[in-house]
Length: 266
Image (tube, rainbow, N blue to C red; front, side, top):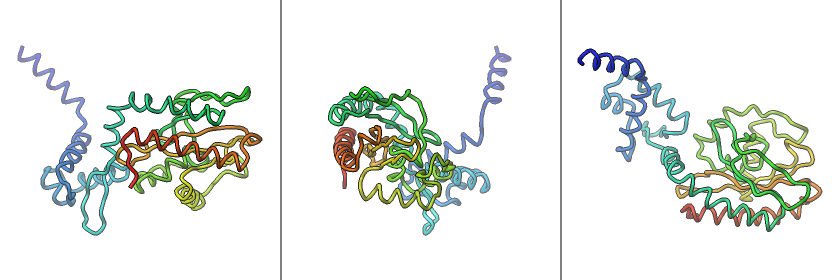
């Protein structure tokens, strides 16, 4: 019996990832420090080397789980963990909220209405309400979408915290699909400013010639852009006037979804 327990303990030991455990320890420790802590305080309190602590902290900042204040030299938790937990607990409720609104938007505009979220490096299409027109767009759940040239990508990116936004910018290759595609970070950041000014984003044939998309972000109760709603249609049905009218309806629908998720605009 003792040998069996000994072998079991050895097996568990072989599958441990020490630095992952230390990273989680850092997150748990900082969850109790409302004002944040310095590198020295963290390494001393958790009894880990300065080099290891520095690498873990920098990695968590880069991934958006921690915020670093240059003035105070303190690290503190971002809202990303809270958002992840909220998503895992309320994923079903989120879609229960989104689906009826997608259908309502589709019935108003007649075009296909879609919902998507951020993935690890790109956006991910989740659900749609197919348009009423004979010619309409149909997507497969799980299909990725580019962030630099899609309406939902721009809509979400425009409202991300800087640390998270910079992380996704680091993954972007700004692939050119045609002469209308944004291919530089500088131009893209200016585009995101426009999105914040108008409250919605437009894909003006930037990926597929002849196809226009209009989208707006959905916010959860923390104010984090947890997804986007958008419509897609051919340019002959989406004139400038139609785009503005569609944007008005989309913003109204995303506002309703966000409110049901507990978002309160300040």
